[in-house]
Image 1 (tube, helix red, strand yellow):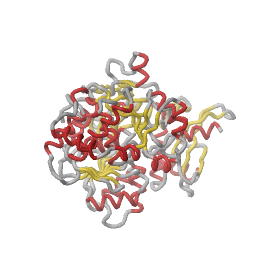
Image 2 (spheres, rainbow, N blue to C red):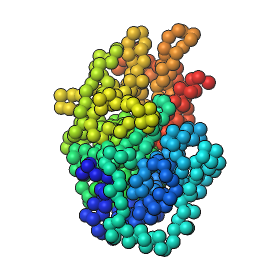
Image 3 (tube, rainbow, N blue to C red):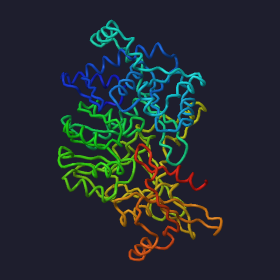
Image 4 (cartoon, rainbow, N blue to C red):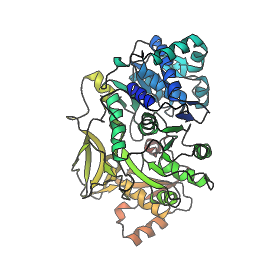
Length: 505
């Protein structure tokens, strides 16, 4: 996939190569578009966007849908940067994101704000000088003449796509905020197209495959792998509203005979529990990312002869850095580093096996938004510090040992909280667990607290398991908190910030 291009131009190339009148993209709301209709929609909306703002950034607060895709691409066709807002953020965080992105317009819908509990958002945005534009209202004002004009501009190739260059910002995404405040990541057309090309070079998935993803488009994995890659590669693309809507997602997979599924371990495990015979029969591949794929989840899907492919990435990398591919998969790893990505592993104090992964390549972000404003860079000569402790074996397979922030020192030893969670998962595979290091004022030392939604799990059971497996007592949780459900982000990751906040209360 040519990276020395822009997303609008690449979409036009995909449309020219696939002139079928069969829709290429479908959503759970029942909307579908052919390539031709998709591009006309982008052309018409781009004209409207150009009249709404002179600023370069346009906020998009929309559900996973065909409309959301048209809004994002419409911004690009208008030579604007789509700032895809995370609707799961608390209101104060969402407003701070809008301010940081220097928005004066946010595209959204009445129905969506109602469902998200954000009815009063327009008032808060107005207080910041930001105008809320409702797409339903805009659609009513777009007459037949505007639509014909858009179709004519598409036919005569007068879309002015040459205004954008490969190194212009295409989207701004915010990091998940699972461990710290969200950062605004600026990704260019080149970054995103390069990452799509890298994935296809490692895993040349064919146009005959049918992609299903319900991962949110404000998440880089959901946007790049779930929308851009299949659309720009000529693949039928099915969009689910939310990864939490398991029955609806299973119905979409079954109805459209999806062959490739993107998701996370948490959502895969939950979906399997409610699946009925035949729901997953069409699937050939499942690509899991964003969090560690548990052995139990892998076993469940592999029992249906589905190929499980675990990958790894970061928003700053567009996002995919490594992935297992058919015929070259190693359990316990996240696969090999993608082509055209350099990497190095730097030692970290107290870590004997592995080190901190740094990566560099054309898929790496342009910068964080605050870097652009302060005329500096968080990339050191193009290198990005992932913050992940990793190992790479002799065959090039990457294994994630944990986040740098997810290690704690106890009795002079660096303890991996991720390792503890994995070990508890072996003991209780059908439940969720999260380990947190806390400072104990009473004992003047660090101890490990484990959160779990397994009502039968006890410290005595854990201690017996550790003894049997000969795991040192330094890895033993000293406190156990039972919860009905652990807090998770919409991406499926455990919300460690919320758990840490509970410690402070």
